[in-house]
Amino acid sequence: MTVFQDHIDEYGDFEEGVPFLSAKRDKADFEWESVLYFLNFIYPWGILHLFITEFITKCNFSVKVTKISQILFTSFYLTISGGSVLFTLLLLQPVIFYVTHCINAKTIFKWICSLISLGLIILYKKDYTATVQEAAGVNDYQIYLFTLSLSWMNLKCTSFYLEEKTGNILDFFSYCLYFPTIFMGPFILHEDFKVKYSHYTPTKMRVWCFIKNVLITLFWFLFEGVMLHFVYVNAAAFHPLEFLQNLESWAFYGFGYAMGQHFHIKYVVIYGLSTSLSSFENVMVPHLPRCIGRIHLYSDMWKYFDAGLYKFLVKHIYIPIVKLTSLKLLASMATFGFVYIWHGTATYILIWCILNYIGIVLEQTCSPLLSVKKSEGIKFFLDWPRRMRCFFGAVLLAVSAISNFYFFGGKNIGDLFFRRLFADNLPNTIILLFILYCGAQVSTELCPVHARKCDNNPIKMKY
Image (tube, rainbow, N blue to C red; front, side):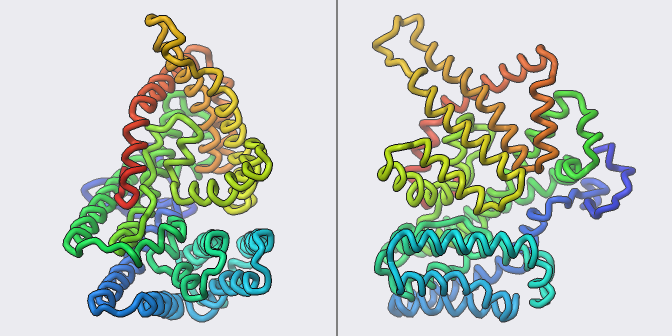
């Protein structure tokens, strides 16, 4: 922190913080600043959305009326906040998907439509964002949230018509234009979304759960806000690379861990705000991201960090390809190919996806070799298979961390960690692997407990 106290802020990475905490607050992470905008200007509309939906339900109006009201509410908000330009552009995807489905309902055409839409989104991000922003007359936060909504809309449109072979237009648009998740996610399968129309929980219980979930989310929001007064992790990532290069090893590794924790808490808040609204309406929301400090396997990282996206990838890409070809490696490659396109085609995204794919392949290949039934071993050696798995997991965790640093900080930051890990002196490397090994042991011990909680309580929020 002391490095930045007298730092000349050329790029607006800092602002005046709360006086009794610190003179500066790190605001270099635009995504986190967008959360502040979302909380101040959009979340109150989400609460209004709940009141309207609850009123319609209490008046015993039909489900059809509920769906229409939700479509109209979201359309009204999008029109008054972003204007007709953004609203029209956002509607293009669902309209194209609907027309394509009416012309030809084969799965291949839905995927062609999805990939073409993603290609157009990538083109828009690279070349036309500023043009659209100027035409719509919106601020940076609004155009950023609109861009996010395009990506979420793609998943919704694709998933709906892959799940619902004969879905009607009202179901489709009420799902695509569902207000609580339209900007910040998370992705919710249509089969989980439509539970809200057939399942009812007493209002008192839902209100209590809503208050509890919001308070938990606000706690982490305030916690992260305080931390950004003391740990300038985002500003450091945008600082000249010489600053990070000159850090001694443990400070450098600590910076990486801080990046990961900031990313995790950010998405606990982002998804927590959205799912608190959705779960009040009886939607089966995915569990919140599990702390990255408790995950040591690639497969668990994908399964428990963004559970909604994981469900989409497994249900609509991985399982169908495995059933068709029986080739798990090919299915994994196709899955990460989609992840690369969906997140954007930047170089650091490509490296992140490739490293994740390699990690998944190594995990799938080596796990059976390290699995030994207890009956096959002598009592003294019964714990050695677990120790070997955790040692192997520690090595994978090191590679996983580097891949995530590419995702968190971009190519230059990822390259720094890659070089440091393999160029560091032997004692530091041994100590680091031992720490990661201990983390793998803790993660292994806690894994069954967390898995049961996530599987048995899909609507509740978890940290």
